[in-house]
Image 1 (cartoon, helix red, strand yellow):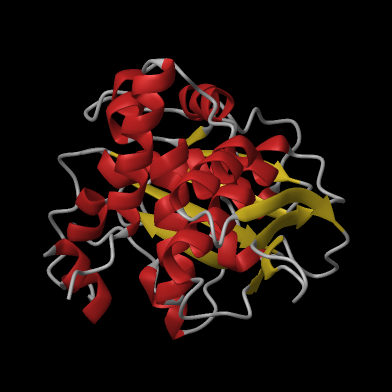
Image 2 (image 1 turned 180 degrees about the horizontal axis):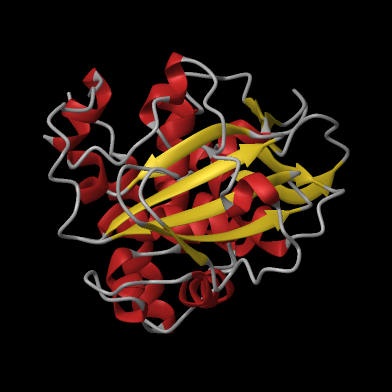
Length: 293
């Protein structure tokens, strides 16, 4: 029995097709066009037949099977969204569900903000896989590395350039950078003085720079940019904190406040020669081990 393609494999195969048709400088990816044309060619008896915005109260996007008298699937995003980056990633996420999960979930999906924004496998395999596909199809690593080399000390302006290039949100572009950078960096998303979730680069994770939000609420440091939301400070340029604010070592924090999501986004940069104090290994779940293999 042939194994089903992984999220990465689907994205690579589609990227190769788009490279051949349009060249490597082909961004941003037109997800509606890709979904309609590719599914019609590859799955003519079960294609994506509609991609559009709709009234989806409480949800970011949806993959819905067509009514019984019609064939195929519809991909929808919340029509109230004004952010093109948020729309684009949502559509790519739902296309991932179509390619990867429609046979196992014939009733389709209705996805909330958490499903589309969180990329950690602990949150749920199915949503994680859809996000992995979306990240790889919208922001291929070979192209992203040309924008920001793996050893570059990135800032929010550099990452914002990539967000514009790929037509994704700043969070999506930051998470993608964390996937491959060798810098020690942590993304923190917070609201009302508490961390909602956080994601560390591999090098930061291995040296103890991470937050275990699964074990209970973690307060944002009161003297941090996210904690003060000081409008007089240029959050994108950031500030340098001494030891004891975010971690036991100095941290450069850059922050913005995303009104459309109602939360603060902090990017924490640490020196690469730091972190020697950490002895404890972070927990790793089964899915992380499987995907690494």
